[in-house]
Length: 168
Image (cartoon, rainbow, N blue to C red; front, side, top):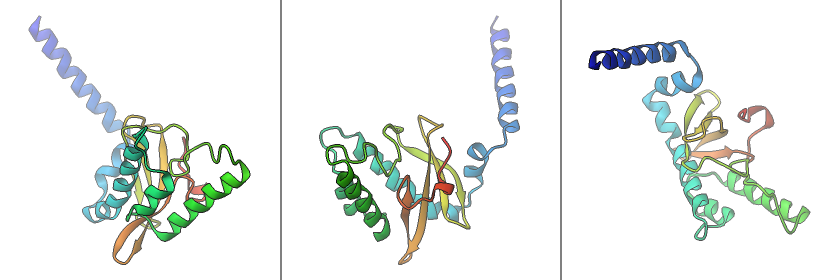
């Protein structure tokens, strides 16, 4: 009986690895192929979005979105200005509701455990991230070099063209 269980486990491991090897897509292949230099470029983007999610998860102690982003040193001035513009315009249009969704996450609901890298385009500096606990939830970010530091210049609705938005 023990031999049968061990044989079944080995079979499952081998067949599972074959399935994984056959599934050649960006989400499983690309992050492992990213060079150390490229990873250094995107660290701030992942740090920003995961700290943003941590703040969003704080129900009573949450810092207002504009205040949080303005106090964060991982975003560009352009990002901060566009976020403020979008939120202020939404409140002018709908004074009681505003946007009714989060413009950084471009959604009402989001992965509560944060994000991980799915793909990175070194030529354009766009990256696609996916939810750690909700892998179908994908988000596009853009980074740019400012004073020798890689900063977030776009995320979700902020500074991301419609053609670059991640498919969900």
